[in-house]
Structure formats: structure tokens, C-alpha cells
Amino acid sequence: MRIGAFCAATGLSRDTVRFYEREGLLRPRVGASGTNTYREFDAAMVDRVRGIQRAKAMGFSLREIRSLATAFDRNPRDRAAQARWLREKLVDVDARIRAAREMKAHLLEKLARLESDADA
Image (cartoon, rainbow, N blue to C red; front, side, top):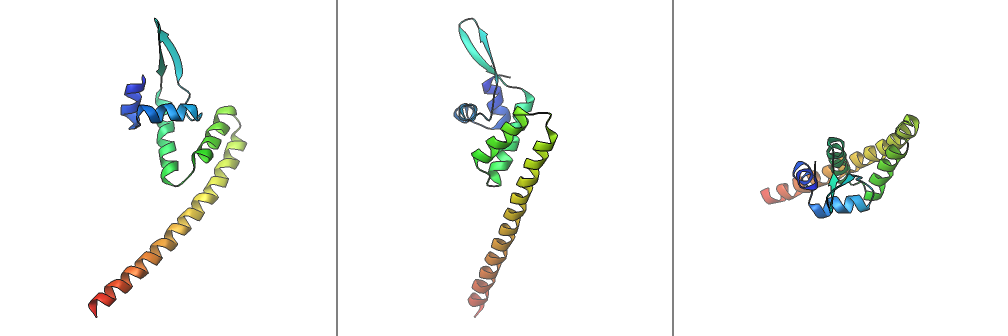
């Protein structure tokens, strides 16, 4: 699919797609039609963007995301290296989950205090 359809499928703007290309997160096939060049994206890249978006939502930096993408792109058959990277990231995710639970408990405690003061 061309960039317009890719943007519609992913919800990304053209600028974001081009930024991801510059950052090495996306590598579309480049084709030519007459004097024009165009980018060709496939369904695997749509899935990759969804993974990028999930990772960003979890607070991972583009550097971390690029590291994962590079590990998978360079050695697509090196499952041991990919598994090591994923295990490391799972440790990070678990730490973020613990931190989120602690923050939730803190906020619930503050809310309870505010509501109990309002009742007085």
C-alpha cells in the first residue's frame, strides 16, 4: 500500500511515517513510476506500527523501540537474542506495572482523604 493508505490504516500522519523512516523504525520498499518515486508499505509494517504505538504508550523510548526493531531486523532467525531482549523488556514492564500500582494506591489514598474531609 502507498503512504496514504498506510496512514489511514495506522492513524499516523505522513510526517510521523517519514520520521519513523528516518529513525530506522520503518523501511518501506521504494518503487518508481515514471519520474516519480513512491513508498510501498505492507501489512507487516502496519503490525509493526501497532507494536511501536503500544510500546510508546507503555513509556518506552524510541531508542528502546529502535533497539528491538534492529535486533529483529538484523537477525530475524536469532531467536535466542530476541528472547534475551524480550526478557529484559519484560523486567522493565513489570517494574512499570509495580510503579503504576503504587501510584494508583497513592491516588486512591489521597482521594479517600479528600472525600472524608469533605464529609466533615
